[in-house]
Length: 309
Image (cartoon, rainbow, N blue to C red):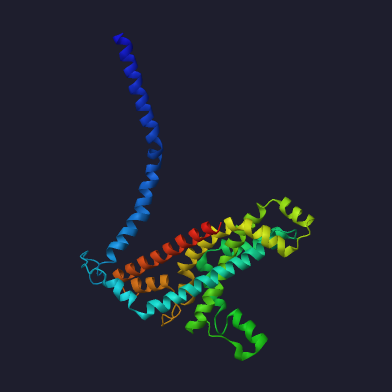
């Protein structure tokens, strides 16, 4: 009897140990990823938040002693008219870019979803802007925007005369427009491929049933294509907005050398404040504000889409 009781206890202990092992096994497999994520995401985030409350400049950078100044960096940013002008410019930059990414991307995706001669070659040509590195594309466009030798001005002067040349790179307003044109060219292929994937997942039976009912092309687009593309387009728009809001390479390359800050967006202003003016604490506070803006936008946008659904 005692032997049976002992065996039962041993079985119970073994069963509990197996349960504990099976419960902790997934966490053990996830542990390396969690450690890497903490190191490359959480640590920089908290460090940035930490230095945003301190006065960190080139003078005290090497010493490692950063005086605590509380919310002073945030007060300076929020009381600076340059911040609000740059914020409005960033919103314009983001809305215009994402709008044209979606419009052109959706149009090209619908075009490629039809039967076309040489469709595979057209698709490869349209993906090229996405395949090349962004800064290479931006440098190429910077050369094309040269006031004297650039292809854009040569084309404009051929069509409209010698007075049509535009100072794309020397005037801040035109530099900003040039950066928008470049970023639209770079961003359309991503949206096109996303929409094309969504279009190809829509069952053809819906369109055949609509044809039977005599629906027009616009009615099919409005009542079938758009609603079924919405789950694909919504995350793509959120991602595109965050990427465009934080796009520094295009702005930096196109507006490089401009003395004023009237062609900058928030993220490029952060770069200039940190690495041109060496105001690291100020830049960290500005980065935290950008992070909060994007976090608020993403949360509100996704929540509104869920409510609408």
